[in-house]
Image (cartoon, rainbow, N blue to C red; front, side):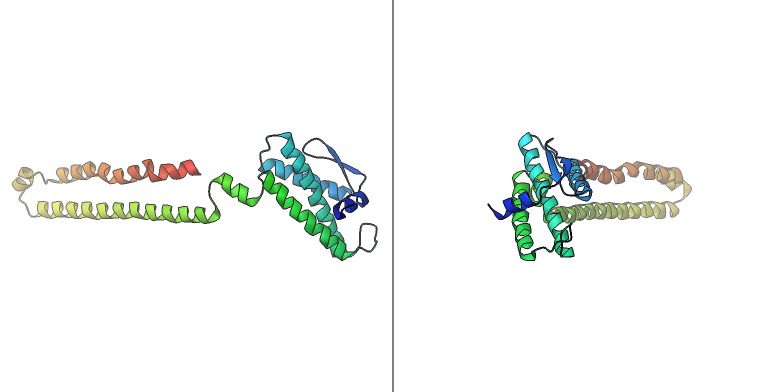
Length: 211
């Protein structure tokens, strides 16, 4: 009999819980039942399981995590639920073996961290790099906007200066009367908006699609 089989036999409980696959398991206390059911609900909410085999593996993960939680508590109290002394070396060995198998099962059904990062399409490092690149693109767009705004401002200042230096007849002849300058301002507003619109139709649109 293996170390884990020995613990499973000793730890057979009397409180029934229903596992994600629909199977029934038994734990030792109502507190363990709440732990099992809470973990099960979170796994189901956070992941998508497409077949019964995955759910059965999830059942095993939940039972082993419940036992690891139990043994961890016994280690901290230095006794079991019935106030009996425990063997720390034996419990630590069992926790280590179960934790290793839990990691392997999680990897097999795709609910470990590496699998989740792959499903999202990018690691944390890739996310940060994309964020840096997006910030750079936004900065470039704003620089273009600033350059265009400054250029247009100087054009407008030149028109106003020229208008101020003209006689009324010259203003009319050169189309730099007040109404002409106002119309010029109206005409260049769409030019200024083009940069923002181009940005929203290219880089920013892809950002939104990736969110």
